Amino acid sequence: MVVKTAHEMAKEHRAISISEFFEKNRHLLGYDNKIKALLTIIKEAVDNALDATEEARVLPDIYVKIEELEKEKYKIVIRDNGPGIVKKQVANIFGKLLYGSKFHKLRQSRGQQGIGISGCVLYSQLTSGQPTQILTSTGDGKTHKYRIKIDVKHNEPMIEESQVIKTDKWHGVQVTFVAEGLYREHKQSVIEYLKQVAISNPYANIVFDSPTGKVEFSRGVQVLPKEPDEIKPHLYGVEIGILTRMLHDTKARTIQTFLTSEFSRIGSLTAKKICEDAKIDPRTSPRKLTEEDVKNISYAVKETKLTKPPTDCLSPLGNELIKNGLKKELNPEWVDAISRPPTVYRGWPFQIEVGIAYGGSVAEPSFMRFANKVPLLYQAGDCAITKSITKIDWRRYGLQGSKFPEAPVVIFVHLCSVWVPFTSESKESIASYPVIIKEIKLGLQDCARKLSLYLSGVRKAQMIAEKKRIFERYAGETAVALEELTGSPSKQIEENILKMVEKRWGEINGEEDTEEQRGEGQDRSQANTEHNG
Image 1 (cartoon, rainbow, N blue to C red):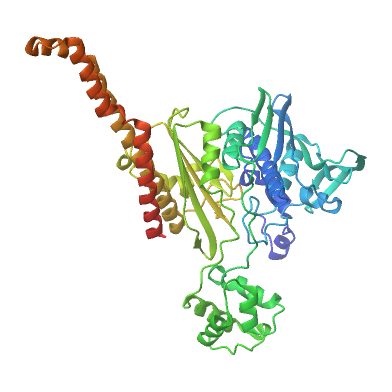
Image 2: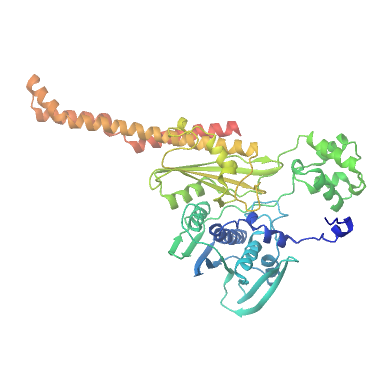
């Protein structure tokens, strides 16, 4: 047996780039099978397109094409009408992992990590050997064309082609990938993803040119949701290591100024109290603090009652957009939505929105999970949304089934936050923080109560209609019998019976009754929401 020394073993050690890591561990980014790989490429590109158009305050027009080149190899094209990308940023955005503008911004957005679109380029070159083609224009009549790969060892872009093409004043981005994949149409497919995108983004117009034909998801509303504002971090969500780094990097001259300028909702009195509890002079320079001082500040923060962070960093859909999206794509018999008041986990603001669609074209039970308006199609079992749905006894709301309703119903749950706690880099399921599960359950219960009142009204209307049919069916026989007893003409008696039936039950119909009960349900639900909030 050959014995190695520490010096010999040390020669084998070397650093790896983030690109090398994900090249070997592509499953972490969602490329664990060929069906999901196609979906992941389109998901990342469509998410970027929606973020860009919303930030530019442009109604999104998105074109998606999948073309089969040969067995299990596809060309994928995604084009948008966003503001475009300036020339100097193109190579880094598409050719460098962990490069982006959203990681350091505390405001709601679909992307978070700066991995998504460059991960698509990495997978494309890994499985096809071909570069990714990018066309982009800012609307100045010039379109920049690039063909890009990633230098995996150094995590740097490699530009194989760069040219400027004179075009009409188009603005936006078109990306073309060639990659291994497998196109199928089922509940976790590209077409289902785009359908759910159309539901959660009803202001977008999406055209999908698939291998089986062209499908258009038309825009349902002409209004974009409000643009989120950027906020500063909240002290409750800052741990000792991050606090130490921020103290080292700050330009503030005193610890009091540091606390009031670097964090949200910290006033001078609160900053002084934290310093007093930590036994630190508020005028001390942040760079002069010891490790023990930083620990004392962290402990003092935990004992201080701080104001919740602002929620203008969120951009929820709102009840009307949720209902519009569900009506537009599902055509249900009944639909309603609830938006919970914003709350906080680990210092991060978040908000839960819930919608339920019942009957009509809805034929079977299903649920849709969303995070920052993005559908989550995989890893449902690990998700906080799934766990919340299964914790509700749906029989209490007039539906069969306990853990999940056995009825023609679609449940829509949306979590929006400045930082969604995904369980992995593939961003497919939400971590089960107790406060998140609690908020989802309350939203589901509020919306289910409205459905229960509607179903109660429908059942009452059906019962009344059945009574009316019975009286009308036997009116003739009853009139003949009464003629023998009273001597009055049976025809006149039958007319009188039908008039009585119409007077008693004719004015009561299911639609009026359920509308009245629906209003009562909204009042009760609002009262319950205010109580829980």
